[in-house]
Image 1 (tube, rainbow, N blue to C red):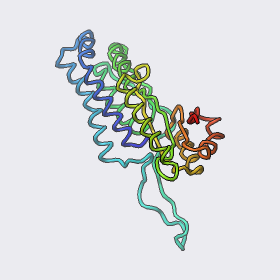
Image 2 (tube, one colour):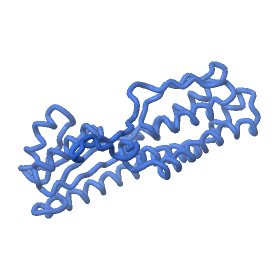
Image 3 (cartoon, rainbow, N blue to C red):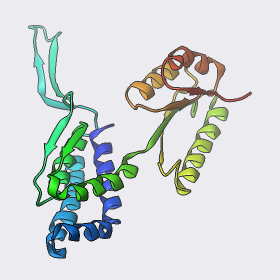
Length: 244
């Protein structure tokens, strides 16, 4: 995912949690907090998600990595240059939070972590951990999209096949999501146009599995593109082809 895609995911999560804020207020009362106290923790915490979602799209590029500085010339004739880039750290972020902000304390650390593309382990304070647990439990369905990919000939000599296939896929995904998705999880469709080129089809299939991390690939529009993807798909994501 790009930084902007993660930021938009964060915004959707914030909306999802805000719609369920009364459930958090009800449980927050059990911690001894007043509604005013809880407002700072609950709505203030969700507000940090909105803030980071906005700054992520405003201050970061719509890319999967961050370019740092200008290219460095490493040879006298300018034939060899280097470029510093920033990528997500490997490993897991560990967040240890205080008892008095079971929601806000978690969300204000989790927001930049998710935008950066890192997983996180959250350790809430024992006294109020049940409120943190409720927010995580309710947030899980909002983040659990099912990603499927497709590479079809939307343009080029086989577009009479690929274009209606692409439109049908989009229609089916929209219809499924409108009816609640699959077991409550929305479907995210990632689609590429290979123009009936076998080399492009193989490249896009590789990207779908290795970069986009889809669970299944649908394609291709022609026998040539399908066969080009077949060997890669056999050891990666399931491949669904057209029936002819």
